[in-house]
Length: 308
Image (cartoon, rainbow, N blue to C red; front, top):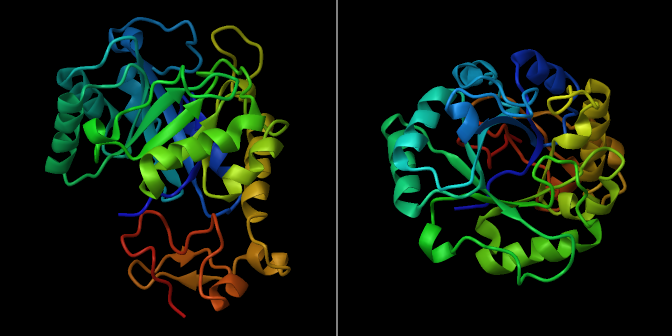
């Protein structure tokens, strides 16, 4: 088992129009676009969230996701109490067949309930990606951080998202980003993905570029919006600038001089599914892939193989 592919995320998308606009602005950088659709205890009960511009009606959740191999479609569920199995199964049904997994913000499900969610997905022939949000303070040290027990949740989650904001736009203390990422890898090894969130936008990505270059994911929400009530409208200019900055950090992971070869992406096709794959020629000649660059589309089961 290898770590899941890293992503560049946008959370709080409420329509396919927004998703397609984000995809149109997404540079080819060897990552997926994480499409984060939000739900909460309140919206699941049919009530309106105070950030109503970021939360679709629950009956519309499945209509936000698009069927595109560039997308990692995740339903983000926020709750003050652990969601039980009944709630999780309901969310699974509401999310529809294009949903690839869940991110749990606030209270995480208990192990038995999360196991039942995976079991329900397996019965449909689906393997869910599960991201657990870990709220981190804007300072070094881990005493105030609650970490999921690997022994307790082992095998039931795929990623840890280090979040200092929770969608408020409050900035991460980026000087500690590498420290937090190292903490995750020390606790869980290299089989668990790690992401950074908290005040990210084009203007704040530079300090976290080193961890993105080393394979960390990123997620943005609050600072990609204007100041309208209800959580703000998605600002597509900010989205475009954020995605371009993230892609630049990822491309810069290649330490070879021939940057143009990497940026142009010498086209190869996957042996299994036949789809084009991003492939760095100088790195492959050296016997490996660029950090942050995958060899084949993430939807392909044979993504580690590329035709010569």
